[in-house]
Image (cartoon, rainbow, N blue to C red; front, side, top):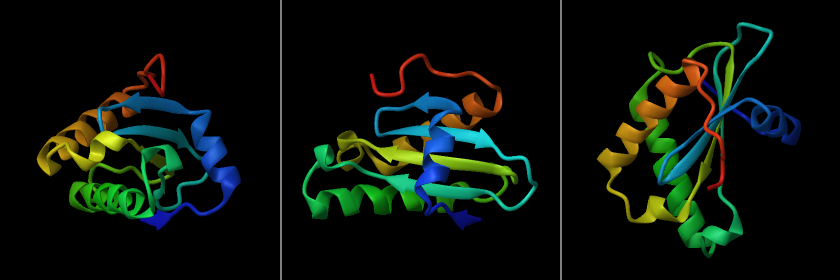
Length: 116
């Protein structure tokens, strides 16, 4: 699993399928190649100061690490957009939400609003 670092890749994932959860928004898109899955993380300044944003980002990275590569498909880009609720929601709940979000995006179901 690789990290997304280029802005163009983040924008491309934003045009794909979205799944919302209380602590994050998951955006995904299928690439044309079958390379390893790539994951990107973003947390806006609305979430809080730098310490809070980094804490949210670390929690999201751990969720992806715990989910393992069996749930994350090759040839896909994933972007997790952190929300302020990620600071207070228990880790186990975020992990469950991530599993559900992955199932929704791989089933092709797009949530109506990504930032509701």
